[in-house]
Image 1: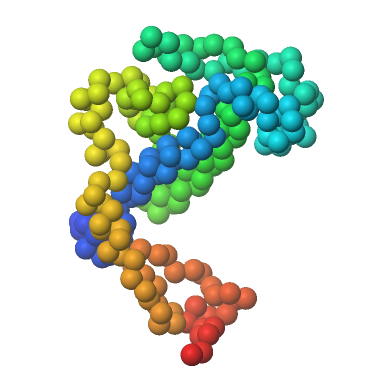
Image 2: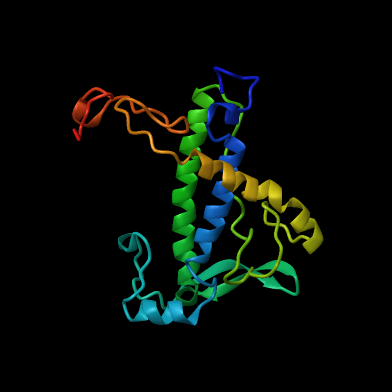
Length: 207
């Protein structure tokens, strides 16, 4: 991008940053669903049976989680409001919190890379209510900032937030083998050095 600032990155076979952002929106929102519903009796039962645990459980003092509550967002009559939920019933959300924090670290790292390169672009995570299909916010259109939207307005904006069929076709077109030692696909940054500090062009496998 710095070498060819006035050209479309696609002309050089790389993935534009706004397209990377749309894939972040897709995979992050999809992954949040994997933790299950925000309020869940199953999560309480599994925690009580020792089949579900919190990340870094050793940092907690109450390992039974009988007494505590978790303040979470609930969707009531189309409006978002805070509600205290018994901690065991909120274990899915407790785990989701840790996953969000880990993702935020990755986003911060990528943004430092952009800043160091002098690129005026910053990645972000969409709100956890965006594009959910499981749990409290499933079936309700939320913006990337977590605001309730009209369905028509949501559908009008979704191609700005999610990979389009054209995006997917372009990324698929880049998936071409590069097998010559020392050569890399255009969308991959070459490593600083090879495995075991060998030269990048080292021929690890001889056919």
